[in-house]
Length: 294
Image (tube, rainbow, N blue to C red; front, side, top):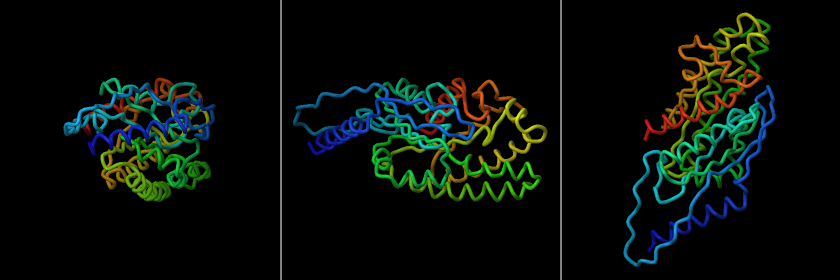
């Protein structure tokens, strides 16, 4: 009976939170080349179970291998990060919502998406967001958390490259500093989520503009330099994830292959954010990572 009362209390708390915060609606972000977008929230349809009236001791439900939670309780996926998470510059469904739908289909259970992505976030401003009671309340219910952050920390490097003042030491110093801040941020995520929650931390295909748009806007030399910045940033992101015992999900190879690919077809018109095809690719990559880490 203690287990039954606990499960009913948790279900009631989740229903109350969803009703109060209105997670059933989703907003669409307007295009913005500076990785800015309006945060969106959404939910996939959920079902409620009828409470058992049996007085016999209850048996804990088995843990679902994909979501990492009891198969009898609703799973919640929380998205944290910049405008890539929020769906910036793409009039489409962001990858968090797509991934949640895929996860629910594969797990054959209700899974709800809470997209807290915000355009322009850095590792520092994400840390500030994590300090809000509203964000902590959402993380307290998370079965999984997906984090995409770090690119905006490095934007200032572009002007240094344009002035000829950002060599390998400049890049290394900036990405290492970003990585240190990310470690602290991921430690906070760990503190605010249940012990069973899984955290997936993504890398980037490029931390700046990419493909044909980057060539047009910045000219010769930028593509190679931005690729070096991205590889250095991704190494720091994965190191931070490993330090927190979390899963690093590579998005570089799906978009870029071995580095010689042109990801233009997967990017919005600004060359910076994913388009609808790019968001679908990220969602599928996350699903593969969730299955392999289960």
